Image 1: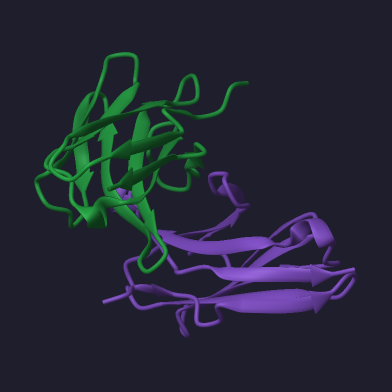
Image 2: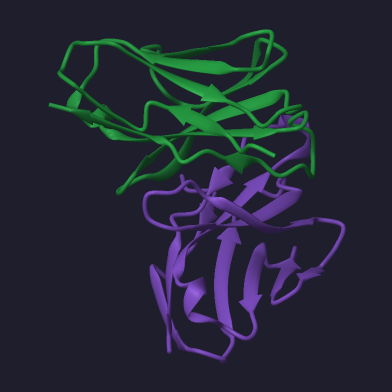
Length: 113
Length: 114
């Protein structure tokens, strides 16, 4: 049973436009959500996080939105840049089960110049 | 500030052998988690160590084990290797593994089983 799902394996956008990556979860106990970016031959790099008490968190070009009732979160990248091309993972965790993250399968983002 | 360091970067073993992977967390980080990444299964949680104690465990067989030392460095051991153990093994550290503290990953150890 996959508790965190990224249903789009890939996404292609034009440089300067908005990239929207989506993630759904099933476990209502999750209260902390994160996005990671991964380049080939490197480990995942932390991008941005959000706790369940918020519905939006922004950091520069990256914004994460959380819809708890729909058990859905999304990452918006505006404007998209070619250097953003990577695999993006969403992850979820619970306060009472620290140190354990459940990851989605990842979405490969390609930003075309 | 140095990041999470994993050694070795690449490893080739044969079926039936055992292997030990090492992880040095970011200085000051006390929680170390291990993940297995495969093309079909994505990143799957193996276990987490905090203050030399295993605090969380994923759904992996007992052949997968780990430990943490007093300096927070961690090792992961896999015994009786199987072909399916071929994967990228990632280590991540966080300050105390508490809520709302992101984990920071190393670049992983690529394990290939022949």
